[in-house]
Image 1 (cartoon, protein in one colour):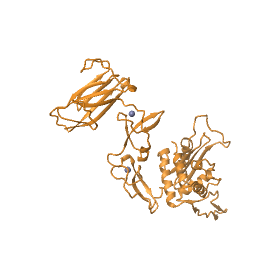
Image 2 (tube, rainbow, N blue to C red):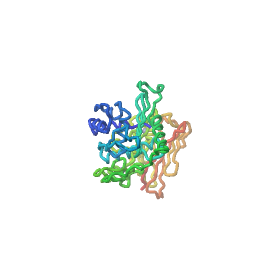
Image 3 (cartoon, protein in one colour):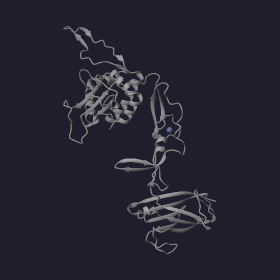
Length: 403
Ligand SMILES: [Zn+2]
Ligand SMILES: [Zn+2]
């Protein structure tokens, strides 16, 4: 489990680093915080007790209570002679505190699942180079900060082993909270989190556009979220339209990383992928993608047909196929179907059924096919299937009209 540092950084730049530093201090971080971009991803050294104060202010709906060691003083007869009277002070709006808590509930769940036995919210911290690992979590009743690291600021583990907040610190924090729940003297109550503050409304929305769902938004892009008053989406998704989305893109996996391109030609192996419109428009075209087959179709008078192809009933057509140099050897069999009927098979090295000559893919492949005079279809598919060694297989189907 890794955090989205890029998003945190962008969010920090968007709201202003001064404000990030201001709110960090306001929420209880006492070490100096300079407004550098890296503060958004935890570059500043902070004290665990300060982190605990900050998270506790989320748990209490935006009210900060600084930690106190002594809550009350009793005399020898057990009479309380002094009691801590702190009321705390507001550092975040109720809406902001609730929203962060709501997000951190999901985040905690993604790491600890339901192994924490009470409603809880939490966030990890993992430093570069395994210097330390953090977990801050809270229930409506208790806030826990768990720090794993060395005072000497030396690396905790052998090279190449990352000490994750999620694997080291989170389970310790969880075990502590769970132990509190069953404490004999002061068992921690299992309290639910407060409902959303007044004025916030829950709404279904499209994750791609951030707008209201419109009936074409794919299921996996529909989400529900709470919105601050005045920010609830009110226009239907402008992005998902029938027949436009998802986009066909070429997906390539290189060293485990996915890369996307626009198809360079109609033979490209494409995948329907959900991308936002502006991302799709910025994708490079896959220009180095070889066309596996170049072909032309002509009628009996030698006139070349143009796409979209349209055939006449009873017509006879010539199909000329040229295999480009750079894909020679990639496949050794080409089948052509017109509807369900196979009209031609070229298999390298075999004898051509039309000419009786040995088939060689480095010279043009030529055949003719006929459209039945009583064909009742308005459209048919012209299909190419190509096969090669090692299971190479690609099918390309063109819609053709018949009149
Ligand atoms: Zn949508
Ligand atoms: Zn391609």
